[in-house]
Length: 150
View: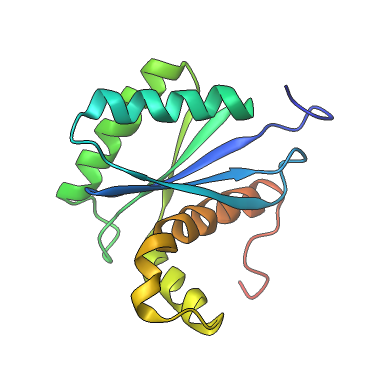
């Protein structure tokens, strides 16, 4: 399912109520928003839905936003996200890449605002945008395209 030997990735912004999902293109260069999964309250159902998406898109790895505190230390939400990611990795057999997502949701709101989306409409897509930003950051780092200002 890979094209030209380039791996495809699923990117996730895991929240308590919703999971934003993005996928990389066939070349493994560009992250694209896919959907927002509303959490069912049944962890296993959420995991199975994500596993189906992994199969559907032929992904070879999953990038999960790791919600560290501003200090860089893991907090309670990071522990929950890491446990969820570990279960997803066990279920799918795919490698999990935890990726620093500090301020990603804030950046996603900013991107939507600048694109002219009214604030009240953000909730429907902000998690997808955050997942896309997380995945794109991961892809850029893999390609050696990190922040050119650093």
